[in-house]
Length: 93
Image (cartoon, rainbow, N blue to C red; front, side):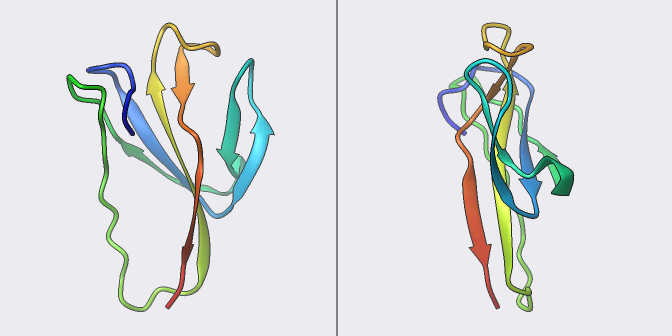
């Protein structure tokens, strides 16, 4: 993620599917919350950037993965957490 609050705790959320759920004022949850399978730590650096690397094996079944980042930000409109836009990844063998 980029353009986030500098030096803040954050996470990249992965789920078995995507969604478009209103989640507080001005927020949309783009992952399927009932199918969340990982919350990977992603603290931001001094420039407000964070990234994670996820290895994908050679024999991966076809899957759709929803991805969204979240970072602690006291100025965010919902409970001090800012969310990125979501991505949908299609993984195939």
